[in-house]
Length: 482
Image 1 (cartoon, helix red, strand yellow):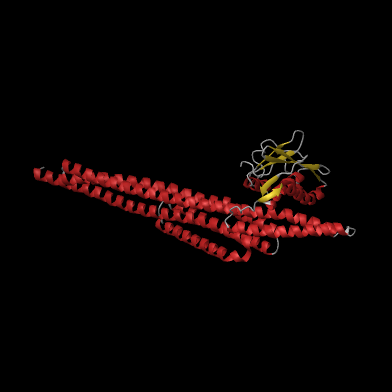
Image 2 (image 1 turned 180 degrees about the horizontal axis):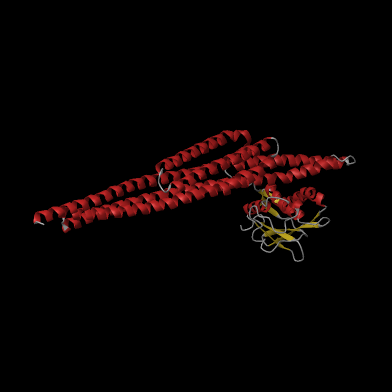
């Protein structure tokens, strides 16, 4: 074979190798384009899931507002419902676009599972929305307690648990797939780099040019890697911001639900007293003086109930901020006596009596009479619930330096081990609180704690020396610390 023929063969082989590597490069470029499209699609679906999560929490809060304020808050609920429907439509469209993008690819099977997840989210939302409608109908028809129970069980709980689990699972799947696509993009870039190097060497036969090409390609690779890292950091930052916003919405939603529970608890006690006094007034053989006293107490409780409703509405409108106390010089024994008198109405159905043993010297404190009386009634009510029929509860006060101590003592089973650290936690019910008559949501003592601490005092509970529990309230005397 002549030299010319050998050269021709070598050139032909070189061109064939060059064409082979160029073909590989074209394929790699095509894969890179698909990867970029896939990354953009995943990012869109992740953002859409975060939006749905946030709007679902806002929807739950609007349902709570309608339960509190009635039809006046309905437009806001309709707006929240419409926003959530639009977010679901957007999520469904993005998911369908992903299916079209991946048609014929191996990832198609995973994408079909995402379609199914989106369908399940929408069906669950519609079931929750139906439960919300039932709660609103119950509340409209006078079943406030039933509406609240439906809201907490079938709306709030399902959004915080079932719906949130579906959305969080979808977001985690998108993050995992996004990480895989970014890794695939990095592998594709490396492939393109080496293909470019080999093609340059084969095309030019110059090692020096190949080195220059390698350095230039490496520089481009670093810039691309930095761009991808910047994109990923930006996406993670935006995701964190949206998740933090969703957490704030969840917290607000939880506080709204807690407020509903507070409403039900604070209304229960005066309504029970009203019913008890009405029973006394309606007795056939009741003494006229006794009837008049009962009617006067009913009138007083009705006035207090009206004031309580005004406070609760202001409480809700100020986003659950504490109401200002109306402090004035007050005789503590007057507050205790008023609380004990109203507590007798609560104690009568349980056949429990109340005994007072107050300090000889009058204790003057700076207090909001009505609020502090409410704290004492909560303590008395709690003691009554845990006292066996026929027993009595004692209310004892004594002066200690510049403070006054008030103890409410019952003869019930006392606190179980481990309860003392949690009895003032909202919604906590002690393990010895299983009496059906003693039902409740576990928020009374947390309300009392807030009232006492806002008076500059402290509250604690523990077991007595022999039996039962002792609730101790400590308040500063007027002028203490001056």
